[in-house]
Length: 117
Length: 116
Image (cartoon, rainbow over all chains, first blue to last red; front, side, top):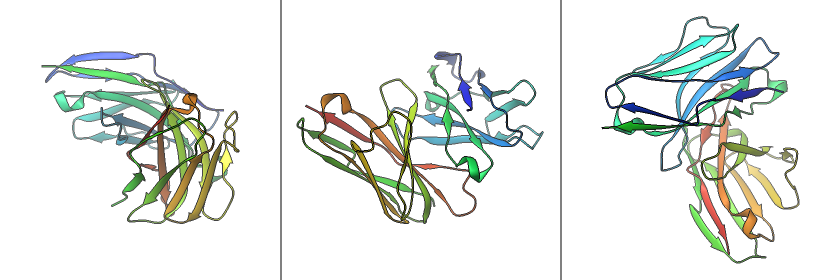
């Protein structure tokens, strides 16, 4: 079974600064997807960024980028130019690529990000 | 596109009653729907996976007789909490995947259940 670990329960960053959230995972599969989801106070889950394991290039979405280290099974999220609206709970998630394993997501424990003005 | 709605957003009920929560995919046909439970400041815990027209697959430790899931159509899944008790109070979230590009789950806004 796959596991996802987020070792930082809480993080804080100053507005306009950069912050990195950590995530590690354990799997025996070679092909899979990794995601970062954001859950603001409204509790609506929002997809921030995804990475396909077979792609070596790190995914980027505007101010959000990842550092995907497949051998180390590490998938960190970097938020640049942090904004007050980035304050939320962030979840790292794993999904197997193979349909026989189902399309279920395995979530980490979450990191609560505070953005200070 | 890819909007998922849940109804109701909040529900308060008395202990012993049953509560039904609806999850709808508004602009796509959902091949698979998922039901999660989330306690305050905790992660999402998958309860069950359902496909249209077939029985739901429950995660280990989830009582299928307690949490009844019906996936009647490609756009609607329902979760019924039977004989609810205060310990069932939680935030329930559904999600759905669509078509062949099903790597992404689209999440509903969640339902807060409070059992008195």
